[in-house]
Length: 295
Image (cartoon, rainbow, N blue to C red; front, side):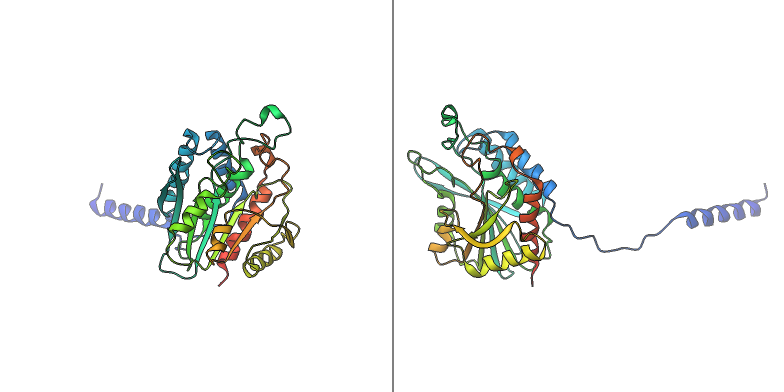
């Protein structure tokens, strides 16, 4: 074959191949949004470990699961410990953008209760609480927020997972041990603290908690109303709780407690995955996510 003809054919082929290549313009990555379905999977993973009572194997697996997920999502984590003599508190702290302002702490407890002492069946009262709502739901929302919050967010956000919140009225134990330990070791004053606890109830009703900072709670409930969750976030006081916000308030740090204490399966063996819902996790997570984005 004539060499000139070969060269011409090669050029034609190259031009044809280039014409088939579609060069897509570079576009900014789509921002993530909070997913209740994803949060439910995080709750399901926790329950798969078993009862996450302090010191148990499932408790340790939960610590590792939370830290691994946070690291995967690009957060810096550390384990804050305190030896109480009978038990070593293990709080998990995740942070990002430490030089930014304001400093906001979002927190939930990850332990589950040793005894289902509110169970209607007396035979169940010495068994542990599965903790789908009372434990796993708050952790699930925080982990999903860790996944979707933009790294460029100009906030110093800490995600804190408290140990030993739920063991009051048990020998040697008390309520809110993890958050008390955290505040005792805290250096500096956060601008705002938000506790989420028992927020997965399929019939979710979130009233103002009586001791919570009025300004912060009004901000959050207003965001919820704008997002269409006003039937869930009810701007009326109903309960005054002993919960993980109390050590912060006692230290003069503004804090709120987002909690539904009307959960019928509280401290029973029926606090299982089937009694929490994607809709409830979505409402809480979506609200907190959008509240954090307010300039």
